[in-house]
Length: 389
Ligand SMILES: Cc1ncc(COP(=O)(O)O)c(C=O)c1O
Image (cartoon, rainbow, N blue to C red):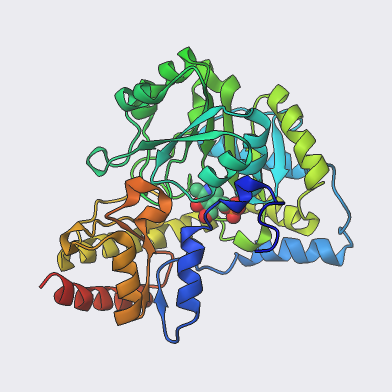
């Protein structure tokens, strides 16, 4: 690279996403079965697509206000009240973003100063560590464990707090583990967050895919709500990944600051897609229900099958990923995935792409048809018969 010395050195030394790296290899091969990508396989429900089409037909194709259409912010706050019983004001507490992805970026850039520590429970979604670093923060990895069902335990959290801790990222239901936190689980960590005045950035993008009980938002805890920053979006719950609509819910004073970055870098999220968001948030509950039932059925099937063929897999309580241990094979996560791709034409994601805590695991997305899942299981079973002996 000819510009090595001239460009931003944080970017120069940043590792490309372990997921992308793997799928670039898979893309060069023919006939690959992939359970690698984390996006729902449903076409966006028709009434939601129609709302975007109507917006274009009516010429609603101009910039919106920076925070997003007021009707959409109203729909989002109405949704949070209806589904999770949390009060947010559309004018004061909400910004519509370009997916949850932009939300993660602008929240971290607003909150962090050079050298601030961010506790990142891992295995974690690949973007967090990279964005923390780009924002000048320091990633402090806290390893979640399978024996704890990948939940965050108070005694573990305590160990990672220093006087530099500025924030923690919570992602329940989690990518890649499918772990969730119940109200009782949160109640144990809330006093710690309060005592140390830690910003709790809670990425609830998989909230609607909670299979045991109902999703609990950290924002329910009034005693820390001022410092809770909710990130969510339409990608996963309504199968709207390509619309790129997400949002932030937070205290007014934080929203005012976060908005400064959003207004200068993004201006506003796509206008026709914001109209689709209004339709989804007000009228999409039945669609959520239908997709949820289908995912739950696939989850039950894949967990049963993986355990049957000899890959120990805990039952994920949320999202659409399973995270089986591959330790019986004696292979590292990357070796496992490389050989699997090479020998069986099956693409999965190595667990270490999500942090060191993911070594010894692979991530399998079950946002694929049952037919594809069945094919993948056959391939895995054959692979294990060769490699376990
Ligand atoms: C945990 C988590 N957060 C955020 C995102 C980003 O979602 P989007 O930008 O599509 O809203 C993803 C996507 O995979 C994710 O898994």
